[in-house]
Image (cartoon, rainbow over all chains, first blue to last red; front, side, top):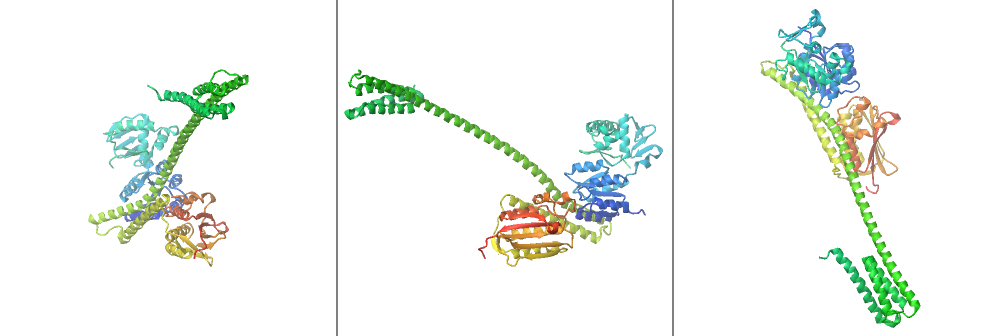
Length: 232
Length: 388
């Protein structure tokens, strides 16, 4: 039997951690609770969780700062909990490396689905071992720069190719405009969301069956995009 | 057709003729007893009257008519237009010039006065215009400010409402999820009896928290609308303190409470439940912001200005001087700036306490605690000594 997956739950609202730790434990996860970012960092070092769920507004060390500190040494999946009205903090947390977000109030099923998706994500390095990046219906031969979807070859411009490869390396993760622009075009372009929108449009035309209701490159309104590689 | 203005002008000439004629007639009746100087002065007075009331042109007519009458009826030889004495010629010419000048001067002054009135009215009109535009501008500014404040408050309220809602929603969905497991063939629930119990407790507690928050909002709205109806009675401060202590007991259980009352506490004329609320807020606050096991000191006395002075002091981290006013703002919590733990308060307690104390014409403020540690909340209430 697999060892139970470990989740570190970080929130200063005791009632929320009470409920979530019960709920997640009942689903077979091993849960530790930290009431602020500082305690979370300590627990993280001692306990090595597989996933971190953190609130954004906390005393001592905020959720945003926790994301930054964790990303300095770890690729652990991070899901942030935010309240509507904390949009900026949420985007900053995603820019700082958080993988996903859930908006309060939420149902336990929604959180569980996000947790499962985040834990399923396989680190990109292991996939790309034999120069092939594959996820769902997508397959990219890195050396030949050859892209196939459903075993059908697709021709992409160099930038479209870079964008798709970046998506493939981060399946399921919410990628902010800022992060995508910085990764594909470089730091000078991070404000040019219009630019990104045009390329996403082109990429959708070449990859989606119905570009007006995409199923691979999903829009996260005002935040960025999430790549869903399709059937597992 | 005569216009009103023309009619008024004509009336001026008619009056000029009638007045001079009538005066001449009256003066003639008294005949011999009146010397020509008196007659001249009386006629001059009438010219002045005509000039003041009807302007320069009727005044000229009155002057000429006056000269004719003066000459004909009063300067010897009377009933002729000839003048025998040379000095009477001088008198006649002097009368003519004086009457004419007086008439013109008076009319001129009249015109000036009218102009001044018009100018003053214009200035007043401009002033009112300016004032109303100023008022509109400052109203617009106030509206803008209050809009900003409203949106900040809305953010705070939203956060305070969503937090308990999040716990409730997560609990309920966890319970539902668990319930579905049972109905789809699972024999026992994964959550277990303890887990289900805990979920239900959270829902219960968080529903109460929402209710307290809404209660606080209502009370604050009443205070802000100036709608706080105080039912003031003369009562004992000590009883009020005891009632508040009893109510706060579940919250202060882990703290040591130290009471210091002066022997003869005066009676206070207050709304007792409202004042109990204030003391409760202060005790709750002290317990929240200081470590379990520390001491909360409550003191009550009469000061030398015939006021009742009440203080609640904790051994917590204290409140920096620059934040001591702001903590009375609604939804403000000191921990956001000082980096301490965020207690589960509504952020409204102190705003409500301040509202109640101010409605009693009292004051509430914060000092550093004894020895510079902790926070001391001080309340003063005016008290009238001749009662009880």
